[in-house]
Amino acid sequence: MSTFLTNSNKKGSQSGSQKLLEFTGSKKKKTTDPQYFSSLRMCYITNFLMFMDILIIMPTIYQYIRKFQKNDEDVAATFLGWVLTSFSLASFISTPIFAAVASKTSFRTTLAIGLIISAAGNLLYAASLDKWMILSGRIVSGVGKGVIGIVFGYIAQVIPPKERTAGYIKASGMGSLGLTLGPGIAGLMAFLPPSHSENNDILDKILRTITPNTLPGYFTALCCLILLPFVLIFFRNPETSPKKRNVRPYLRLNVFACLLVSLGMAFNMAAFTSFVTPETYHDYDWGPKINGLLFFCFGLILIPGIVVAKFIENCTNDRISLIVGLALFAAGIFCDIFNASRARFIVAMVLLGLGYAMQSSLLPAMFSKILPKKNIAVQMAWLPALGDIGRITGPIYGSYMFQRNKDSSWAEVGMGIITCILILVLLVSYKSLTPNDSLWATTTVQKENKENVASGA
Image (cartoon, rainbow, N blue to C red; front, top):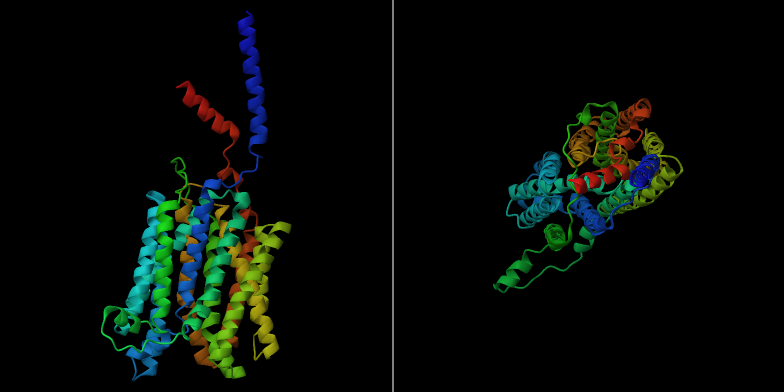
């Protein structure tokens, strides 16, 4: 009898503690497992390299193409457009493929393969013997850039929702730093003296191929190859989640809103960068040096924009911060419309930089919090993939509108309308964009029940 009472008391205490855990377990704050810290740093560095690869060639690629297309400047300019478009198109196709392969096999192996492909593309670009090798090299590099899908998915899979915004802000900060330093690194390389040696040994032949046109490719390839062994040795794959059927997330309103914002903002930014150089030359008589400084300063604006995004997010939430970012971007567009003065143009650049930085850092975090954990790497990959579509179509729109009207105002009117529509979409889907903690909740009770079942078996 006493044994029975003792067992009953034990069961009662276990039942009481279990209820207490059920009540408090879901409120317990989860933190990132320290075993993933080094892997996350490698993801941030990868983001830096992939974004650096986008713009590091820009100061010299036109002269590089002209080297093989000396007789026709129009053909060279047209071919430059095809080279830039092919890079984004290859990235759009490869991003979801990399993420799907990584989620089915190994994040570490897939990331390593992507770095190898990126290095190979940059080496092919640097060693080009004609303009078609330049095109081929950028296509291969664009395929390698698809590892951004792995980075987005990995952050979402190993960082709990409460800390995920900070993770994506770090990734976006490194990407912005890559965009900023890329053209600057290429500009510094232009000051390196060329090799005038006439010896025919292998080393001198290699040195003669290193020019301001080829150095960006060699430098990016070297960076990828330096990171590669660290990924192979120290990168840790995330824990796999149990298999269960989920509703396809892209059928929901909140997911559609996030993807639409990614597409629309990438389109606007790509359109703006396509006509800002001819606009400043036409309106203010700014040459290549001032425009180069302009792009560098614009990249620097992205960094305080990310800090502002984190501050507003701490005071409110991701959704309000994102809407504020889009509102700043829209204000920058309308500030530059219809023959703006130099002062208004500089204010517009600051507003555009702040707004774009807030969007690029907050949107991935918000998107990841409305997705189920199962196959989140594949689902997250569609966000940068839609951005690549915007980067393909945006320059076509911006260049066409500027050439047709000899002014950027009407192109900016369209961009402003698109941004206002995106703000309206976010307001309509505001409630559905609330983070769904139940998709990620794994209480202490559930873990203990699994352990008890395993020990009982």
